[in-house]
Length: 172
Image 1 (cartoon, rainbow, N blue to C red):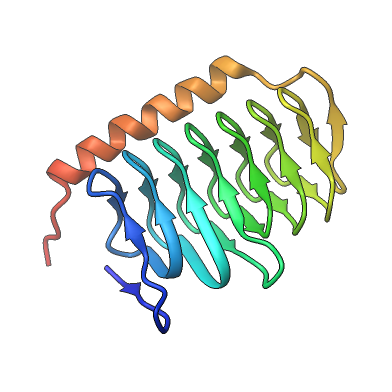
Image 2: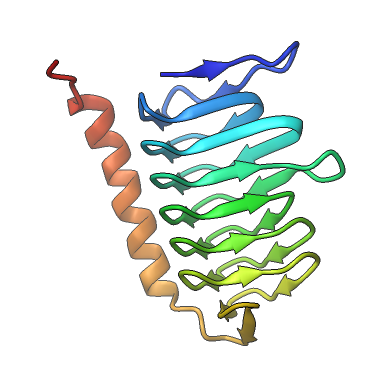
C-alpha cells in the first residue's frame, strides 16, 4: 500500500486500523484505532496535519487534504462517504459526511451532524451538533441528523475493518 513520508513527516497509523492497499497516505497523517481507509482514498498531509479518530471510516475515493493555515480533524466514530472532499475543516465525533459532498476550509461539522450526499459546506460555515446540512450551498436543518443511521454505518465499517484485516487477499 502506498504510504509515504514527506520530508520528516511520516504517517502514524494505529496497528488496528485497516488501510486498503489501493489507498494513499502521505505525510503528516494520524489514523486512530479501528479506523479504516478504503480503495482510492487519498489522505495528503503536506501543508498541515490530518487526524482521523478511532473507528472512523474514510470510504472509497474520498480526498482528505489540509491547508497551510488549517489542519483537517475528523473525530471518532465518523463516516466519510464515497468521493467526499474535505480540506482544512473540523468534523466532530459521530458525524457523517455523505458521499460526493464537499467540506471546505474553516468549516466545522458538529458532533452527530450529517452532511447530506452531494452537499457543499462552504468556507467557515458551522454545522451545529445534530444538524443536517443539505444542498449547494448547504442549508442547515437543526436537529435533523438521524443518529441511528450514523451509528449503524459506523458499526458496519468497524465490522468491515476486522473482516478485511483478516480475510482480504489478492488473487493475481
